[in-house]
Length: 231
Image (cartoon, rainbow, N blue to C red; front, side, top):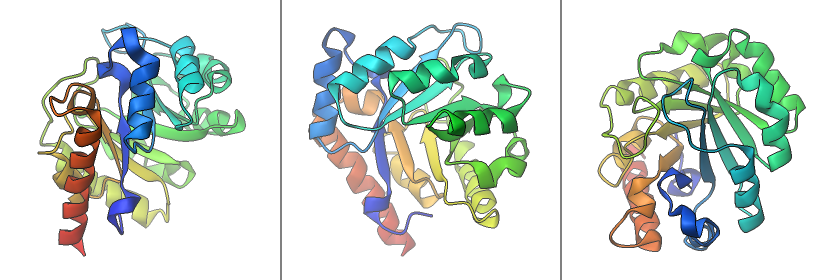
């Protein structure tokens, strides 16, 4: 689990951003101290919703120096590896449920020059990633059913995060453990206590009444409080 508060990364999801001011909003999270920018690509097949793809990722890259954490909620993600790499993604996370050759896909992502992550949906057992855990740069535990932002955090994600932490530790992996869906100041601490090292938050950042800087600060304070309880 995270050893200190600074080890916990905040990755605001632009799914909740104002797309009329996307460049400005990405610059705002960078100025507020975000660690990564989370880009949710959806294709209308793997999930019902359609969002955006490499062109938006490239626009984000032009707007900010933050690493792009690209979450590909798409069918046949192996077909888009080169496009996402060319768009400037630093890390590409694919779903275990979206491909039949996950080991090959993880290594193809690495060969394309990106870090490789794998996401698992709420009902997907972690056995799906057990044998590739040593190869991962990130494991993403979904705390909602993917497709739309603004959903309520599923409590089942907490024991799953604990299990994912044990899995990564047993594999000797240094991979980040990310959680995505319904993360806010009320759920962030529990996620960190369960072993998460990356918090994805969309509505809790871009939709916060207190504004982006205060929202990020509150998430970081919640993470720090959890770390203090751990140590």
